[in-house]
Image (tube, rainbow, N blue to C red; front, top):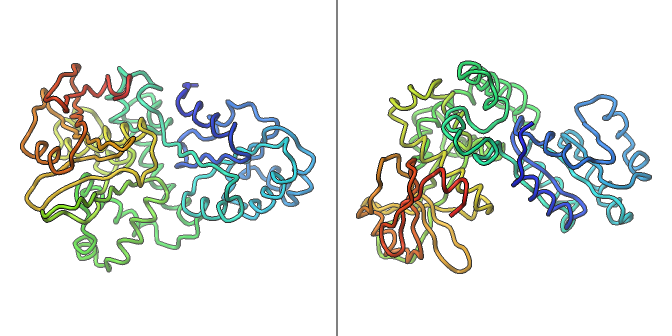
Length: 377
């Protein structure tokens, strides 16, 4: 088993503070494995028929229990949430760790009953520090989902991801109550892969796919709510320049993106026209996880004149930016200088796959990806 100390520590902090902690994330991201490290006093898996039967009368089953209680796949029985509210308000010796593969539905269902009592932790897959910083290229190619990364070969990893996509579309999506044919959503998902790292134009995609832009938004939201996609929204500074106002699209897991693009090996990736976009999405997601902010706290910035910034965030009243370049030695470009000036950035990081960190200006630096992943910013 590969230890995941950052995720384990963050979940422990939430468990210490809240009576109910929810680990949410895509299927096969390691939620159950992580939960078992906390040595629960009682464990219920709602995909196990015996455990499901035990919780048909949850108040009777849970009423006498003490300690840490783990409930896995809780989205299968959302009527448990009001019961949990009663129990945590009544008994101070109970803690709950609940796991689920749905995002919006689980948060909405649990939030209505457990407001103020529950904290959420989003678990994706392995971090570079989990698997060894020296293995980051393998993580980039195969993605962060444990079975994909740990496969015996690139070929087996690729086959696993293809099967994962099929299972997600044919089983997981219908279980969430979303009645969209798997073939339709697969075609749409494959089309979106060509927009990875680009500004999202709902109308353009709708015309290409033969659907309305409202339907495009609905499909994108489904894939975002199930942890497959990240949409970055533009930051609107009070400037006279014409700013881009549409969101930017990324696949959260680089391995699933590569599977959709039929990229099986590192050699194929290095020769692929989407190499730069793949690097940008991978490095951006690693940095966002390191910073540990909510997804809605990250932005990008772009003007119609061509100036842009890949990632913008705020910390302690200061403005920070990051650019992701797959080059040997990044330099400060006109676009970067424009972003630094117009956004009044306190610091700009240019993250690249080399080994050395070096200054680009008084408030900008080229930052090695491997050193960033190991040491932070």
